[in-house]
Image (tube, rainbow, N blue to C red):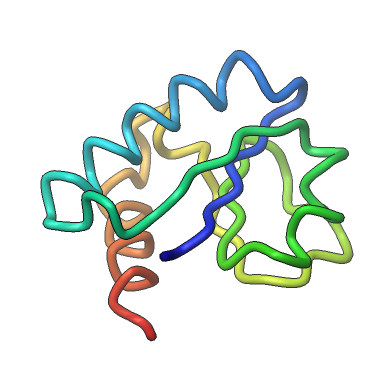
Length: 95
């Protein structure tokens, strides 16, 4: 099971909106039950990345991440969303 960290400034507002979109994307592409999403603040993302498979954040990429990173901003703005969705799906295809 893939462990996905979804981070925003506070771990509440924009991460909740993006989490819903990521869940819809993954479930509609056959990944239901293959992932777990944990929401947190961007300050908590770096230490949480040590046990995660992927960090998606609605902020700039923090230094010190221990796993891959995908920007969550396209899920908020719509700009570049198809590319960001493909990045998430490509990540899920990896072992």
